[in-house]
Image 1 (tube, rainbow, N blue to C red):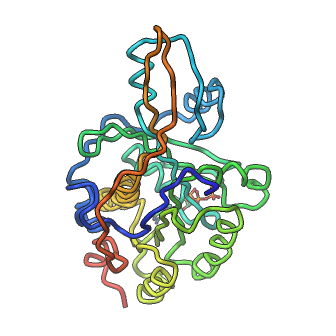
Image 2 (image 1 turned 90 degrees about the vertical axis):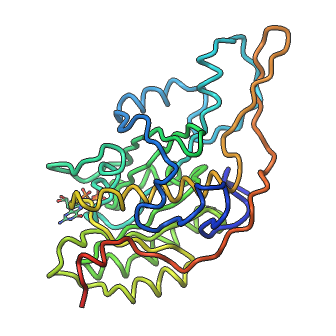
Image 3 (image 1 turned 60 degrees about the horizontal axis):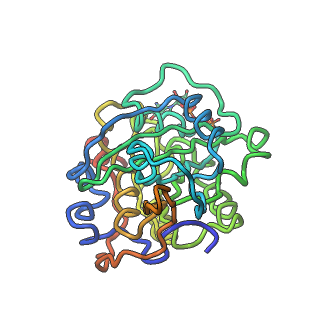
Length: 296
Ligand SMILES: Nc1nc2c(ncn2[C@@H]2O[C@H](COP(=O)(O)OP(=O)(O)OP(=O)(O)O)[C@@H](O)[C@H]2O)c(=O)[nH]1
């Protein structure tokens, strides 16, 4: 494995992780056992905190000793971080989707992402506090070049986005998948497909059945939604929360035990795999948007 990613199942967990795993991907269900504690971490704050860390990866490999023994340290090192990257053509709405998830709103104005922005949301899933770290990547090639390695490093899940009103953005998904595979992202890293801008009902170019077929062929769940439509807020949440639930059910990621030895705190990365119940393999699912925006 080149990523700190789950090594077992890749599909939606049916019974995995208790209530968390039930109905993954279905409208509203992913949030059944989820509490959002805080949201929308400021990018610069996030960058600073990352820069001050001794290790820049979201999934650092830890085997070190430090002299600190405060409870805050203990708390912070027990919070798992799930790194989810959002990939796709420029202008498909990656930034807006991440805003909707982390901040609960649609930004008035966006500019092309340069390099990467990352936003975080702390959630509670079945009693565990988890930090969902969403990496909003640049769609324009000229803004990606130097950052691509960082996107894929230690990624735990991938969200591929296309614009339902732009067939080209759908066709280009193959290239994005190839780029992802080319960066040694394990096939076991969960991936989902998101068709955004479904509010533009009259301009839709990508038929749902075509997208569903593609998602099926690539072993992904399909969500069709709109970052803009506030009624879709819950479905946008479900995209990320379904992944977080899957990751939680699969394995301990970035979980470090705290062991005290002679007043010192020893950090060790957990290597044991949780014995998650076998997933019920489900068909790729759509968000409920389809029901409200009938497609031809
Ligand atoms: N109608 C509609 N417009 C949207 C939606 N999501 C995003 N947009 C608009 O699409 C444009 C591009 O959105 P962004 O989120 O910046 O796109 P991006 O994929 O992050 O683009 P890059 O940063 O260049 O990769 C903006 O004008 C948004 O307002 C949506 O769900 N519906």
